[in-house]
Image 1 (cartoon, one colour):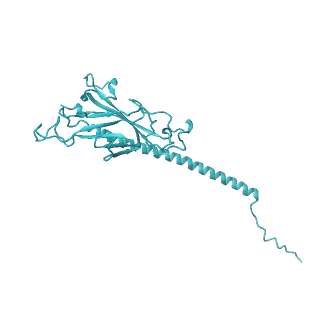
Image 2 (tube, rainbow, N blue to C red):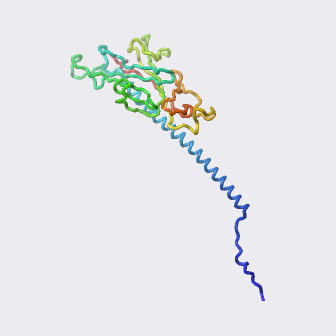
Length: 269
């Protein structure tokens, strides 16, 4: 009589302990690689987004500045008590942003071009309009009352702007040319010698890179060199709008500079 084994059909195959441990090691390595790739991807995304934000904010701020400067001096005449088309106030320190006030007459059609049907000077000119451009708490602001101290009518033009430097382009010798030595930060005696203005502004990314802070080593800094422009160094050590413990070197920056002719001064009869 043939003997039948009861265990012949119930044998089960499985993984050994060594195979399980090898599989766990491979899985852990895969997880580590995935997280490393994700971290690198996030850094690249943050850098791209921050650079794009700084670029957009800088362009918006520069557009508002050039528009404001092109209006400077419109409708002014020698009878005005303050005939300055542009008045620059340098920052108290090199690291402090400058501010400036532009003065003009809005809705005023007397000038070097075709006048209205009113008879000048019998027509009463409108009141002067003064606009102040300044930087405060990581934003470029504009005030309609000519003073940054009164914040009741401040308008935020662009966020993320941390530095602004402005210089007069004067024509002291009357040759109609702003020469390199005639770019100055202090107001000239005669406002009608100002033929142009040049300025530089710096926009900053909204987020720091990585875990950089004020105590970080130089190898972790995002920005290692202070930006410059035609007028000199753009000092960023003022840490405008940064929280305690943050450092300006941990952020990315975009520098914008432009020269704007004072057309209303040049065309003044």
